[in-house]
Length: 140
Image 1 (spheres, rainbow, N blue to C red):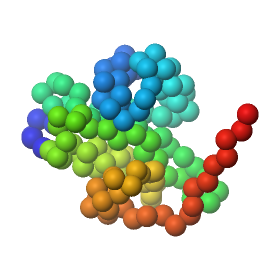
Image 2: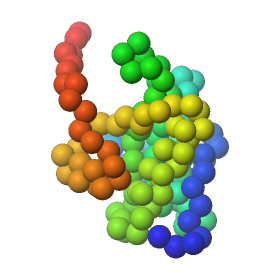
Image 3: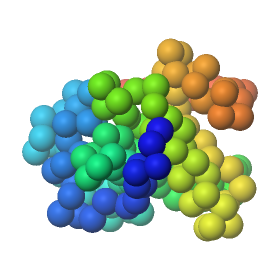
């Protein structure tokens, strides 16, 4: 990571800029992506961008959650670093931002769902597997 990396919240008008990065992880067309982000933002979701020399090279989606079981926590929905920029500390910088944001909001925990291939990265950052199984059932 270089000293010129800037991590900050994206303004609504910058959401389209995040699409090429997010599309490296999610299979949404541009319009569906923009609509989904705006819908989620109404519930507190935020997109945070990492900029290198003014170019968006990484994105993380954050949302505050409060449950009876876990209390208040910050949930990471999406962490994507442009394929050409991986291995430069950008993902670490975005995760550090998430942890600082959780602390600033008085939240003691950051939760996320990780693909098996990403687990070692998160473990290097001090995350540990959570024992509660996640289950789902499709309806309709």
